[in-house]
Amino acid sequence: METVLFKTRSGSHLYGTNTPESDEDFIEVYLKEPEWYIGLTAVDDPKGKMTVSDDVDTTRFEFRHFLRLCLAYNPNVVEVLQSPDIVEQSEAAAILHANRHRFISKRSIKALVGYCVRMRADVEEHWRTGKQGTKRKALIEQFGYDTKAASHAWRLACTAAHLSEVGVHIVDLRKYPLRQEIIMDIRNGVYEKEDIMYHIQQNIDIADRHIGNLPDEPDREWVNQFCIETLRRHIAK
Image (tube, rainbow, N blue to C red):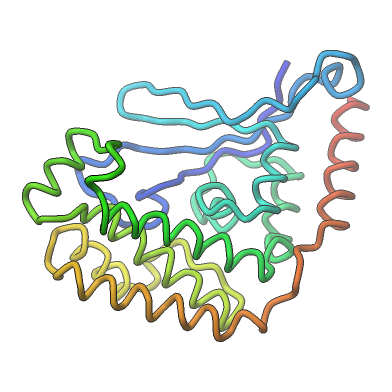
C-alpha cells in the first residue's frame, strides 16, 4: 500500500494569482509499498501522473523521482518545498521542507532562467508552437499575445533574480502584493508585450550578475542520506 508523504497546493493557488476560473492544482509525493524498493518490481521510478476530478488536478510523484526533480530544480516541482499551504504532511516531509535550502545552487538559476526563456518564446513566437488550447488562443486573439505565458515568464525571471540576490525562492506572492498585482495585470493584458519582454530580460540579467552568491551544486550528499533514511524507516515498518 502506498504512503503519502505530503500533499500541497501548486500553481496559481500557491502563487496567489488564481482567478475564479482557475482550476485547483495539487502535488502529492508518495512512497510505494516497501516491497517495491527491495524486490524486483521496480525497473524505473514511476514518473509523475496527473488525475483530474471536478476541476481539481493532482499530480503524484514517487518519492525518489520527486527528489531527483528537486535536485534538477524543476520549477514546477521544487516550488512546493516553499509552500505555506500543505494539506497533508508526514514527519519526513517536515524534515524535507525544513531543509529546502539544500536544493538551491547556481543550477537553480540556470533552471529557472531556462524555463523562463521557453515561456518567453511562447509569447514571442506562439504561432510556431501549435500547442495553444482554446483559452490560450482566446488570449492571443484578445491581446495580440499569450498573456498567461508572459505572466509565467515574468514570474520566473523575478524568482531567479530574487533567488540569486538573497538566496530566497519566492513562491507565495501574497507576501509581495506589488509583484502579485503586476502578474495579474500582465495576465489581463494591461502591459504592451515589448515592455514585458524588456523587464523579463532585466531580471534575467540581474540573476546572471548575482549567480555567484549561490553554491555551485545542491547538497546532494544530504539529499541522498535523507532519501536512504526515509526508505529505511519505511521498509522497517
